[in-house]
Length: 424
Image (cartoon, rainbow, N blue to C red; front, side):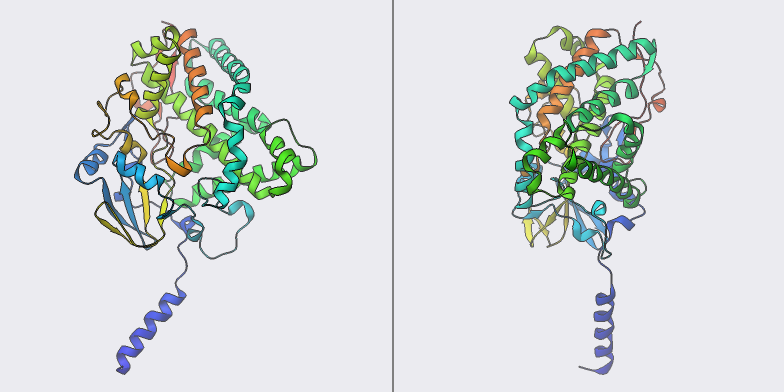
């Protein structure tokens, strides 16, 4: 090999050897051209998402930190990716760089874990979220809903529905479920919002997640000595000898975030939509259980607050609907895009109860489908039915949509303020 070429090859080899591992926590900003799956106009995805799906439901949209990023927007394509645990991994620890991290800075829980660890952890939670076990929570949920509605009435005639209803109910339910003290309410509300906000890149989101996990790991450690009455205490009593504090704290973290922020978004945005859909709003208070379920399912499909699923990482080179995906590439599934796919949804861009028969992906699909889906449905039924019954004339207290504070670039989409008038 000629000397100049040999020196060039050596320089490249040394550069590669010295290059750090990808570290998502240092990402200061998501490239602008990759943000459209997280953007909306009020509750509707931006038109670019539908245009991309019509052009190709699987698209190579760019490269971040040296990784190819594929976006999946079609319904059937999304189901295939979400159900395929052979071609894809959910473990993203390789994106945390090379520095040593604390237990709370790690990535884990159900959403970012592969079998056999995922199987072991999910097996611990699944029995607690069966319909039979969840029925014990109905009276508690009904009581929390009634308290929240009483609080709205006492603070009316105009209230912020996000704080008094959307945030209040799921937060109290999840605190009761886990056995957590409620004196951390404001702190955890802020952390929950920051955790899914990617407008400042990965650093802020990762920091909020670390603070949340730190609190929950410490909660598990305290309850080792004196288990509480909630889910954390129950898991410690029944299986605590098999799982360490970090594992149980990670599970509690997943339950807290999955059961709080997403439900808060659904209740707030659901009320926003229902105020514009009087027939559906009336069906909640006068319809039977089947009619109520139809309204709830269409709200889940139409709003789908979790905009993208946990990222999937290609285990090997493979073909994905005509696209060559290389090992290590990131595949992002747009749940909002899949839920509005005209190939399977009759009126995809409209809130229409005829759409409710579609198998929506609001809770994901496959191995990582949300374990708390039935709990979320219970909360939505109880809270929205209660709202419609107590305040049948509920209406927006502003005509200026900018006052509603719809979030920008948040994985879990919602609005931060919703002023409503309780009675005409």
